Amino acid sequence: MGKQKWEPTRFAALADWLIREKKIPVVFVGSKGEREEVDRILQQMKQPAMNLAGKTTLPELAELIRQARFFVCNDSGPMHLAAAVGTPVVALFGPTDPRKIGPYGAGHTVIRKEVGCAGCRRNSCVRGNECMKAISVDEVVQAIENRGGRDGNQ
Image 1: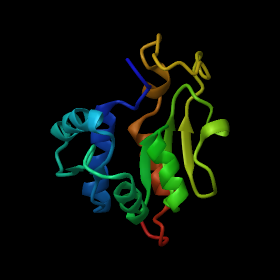
Image 2: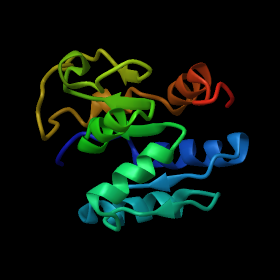
Image 3: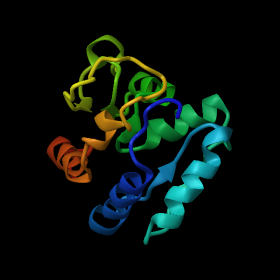
């Protein structure tokens, strides 16, 4: 299955909420290999969003993330890039320990559920991605609501 990721349907629901309720445009980023996965997320959405997966250079990605109000992501390289450029991160963690490899610095939010297999650090899940399925859209929405915008607004 590869690296544990949050459910595409949940990313779609969260993106729809951000666009509809917060009037925040949504841009998906990722590697070229994730482009089709992002397209599947977009197909599940009711609101329009942009897929830049595989379409940016590293410096372009850094600048795009730097301009964002915040960055919602799985445990990933772009998560660290967002923290490095000063963009607040809402990171969704599965089997890895965010105390060891979470976003560096202040102002970030990490959501991780303690399930029976927490901390397995496996690249391929043998328990149906239980740790990531335990993170609800409502929890991520609440984390975004609690953090406020970079300028103090939503």
